[in-house]
Image 1: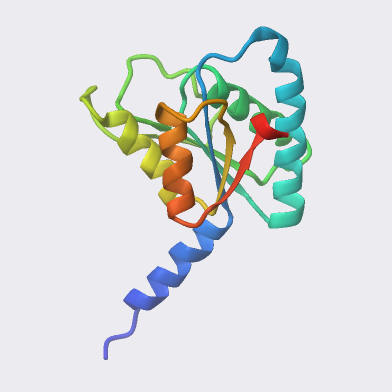
Image 2 (image 1 turned 90 degrees about the vertical axis):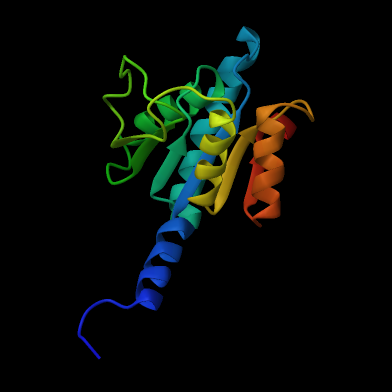
Amino acid sequence: MEAGIGIWQVIRLINRLVEKSCCFTGHRHIPEEERPVLCSMLQQVIRELITTDGINTFYAGGALGFDTLAATMVIEARKAFPDIRLVIVLPYAKKENRWSTADEVICLAERYYTGCMFVRNRHLVDHSSICVSYQTKQTGGTAYTVKYALRKALKVINLAES
């Protein structure tokens, strides 16, 4: 047998990376009066995930609304935890890159196509062991992503229920 890394070693490494990762999913439209409380809750949950669960990588979808709030709170948390990573997962390449503060930006496609948002949402879940959501309704992309996360046996923390 040739020396090197085997398939089972690769699988174990990937599983360890996923175990230390968290994704965010939530609505694009958040009432202005809810934003300060939601930001405070995000700060607290991110801190707990880092210190209690050992999370070191956070995945966000890069959309306006909850994705942006969550990513901003991860960037803020870096002041106390400089080793954490923020990965922005975009469904398709956009002209502007407003995520220069992210550690990594992943573009899953060159152009928009029907279903690209669902592919992005599944990517977020597939690379995480915990999903932090802001879900206030049972339909739409956030509901789909939370259901997918539950089917994949992720721990889901819905900040809208807190």
